[in-house]
Length: 382
Image (tube, rainbow, N blue to C red; front, top):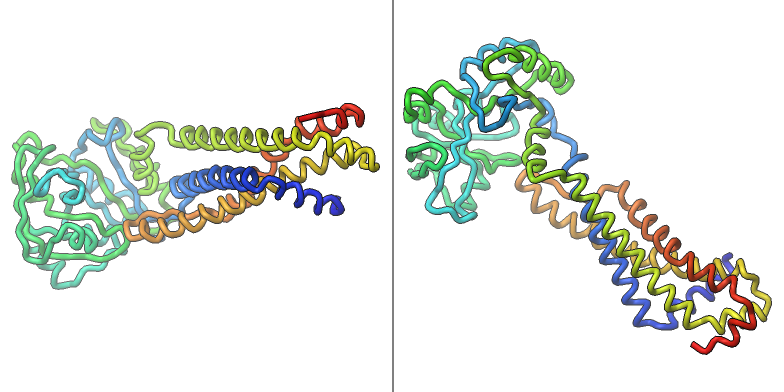
């Protein structure tokens, strides 16, 4: 088969424009397929950090919009394996206006233990104390502070949208760490502003387990404890909780796989069209090759090898582009606690898929050419 390589290379460069366009088409398709793999891996295969692996989220079993009694805090804290319980409420609201550049998360929390829950955040001791001491204080992630233009000591007003009132807070602490685009203010300040019938309720509980190993047992124990309570719970890892927001869009796995299938089908069409045109132009040459002693099998493998090489070159270019783009985007997203990278296991899958698809798309033209009789091939006029 190695003796056929010079013929394969020569045929590839017979029509440079068509060859380059085909390689580009395959490269773009494999680039998109590689990016899909990177997104899929980011959603479903990203390893949690040590701190994140110890955290769980407990919410109402029916929906995140359903609140739970605040007295659950003490009961959850009494469950073996629980180290920290931090009740939290999503405030929402509008700062200045509704433009995306002014949006940031706002959680009402217990200032005494919120930084015990998020152990990866670093906050100066004096700023932390100022935040704890000021009932209207707010702790802001460094990234949010820089993006929105918030400074220590600055007093801001956040208009309520979920809650029917505005809150006025003073920036008392700026913390650093991964995913430090969060902001926290006092749960008690929120409760004091609420109508009496709304008091004593919590949106969700952030929980830190004593170790990652006990996380499954803690989750089961919490949900079992509140199984027959007026507000039953659903407890899951922090990573699973975050992924649930993405799944609200729909079946993400099916969506990604459907796109991948469309890409594979496109590659097959492009390759099949190229090989059909190439073989049609060379039917007389096939007759000449057979006259010179080339067997049908050699002609068959010659055409398949050409398709495989063409697809492989396009696949390598596309996967390389996907790797660099994912790496660049991942370095930017890392600042927001997210990740994006092309997993190593996907590289041979993408290139192998390109080669296999190229070969499959060339099967019919190759069989047709190899089985053609010499006299029929030599009489062919185009």
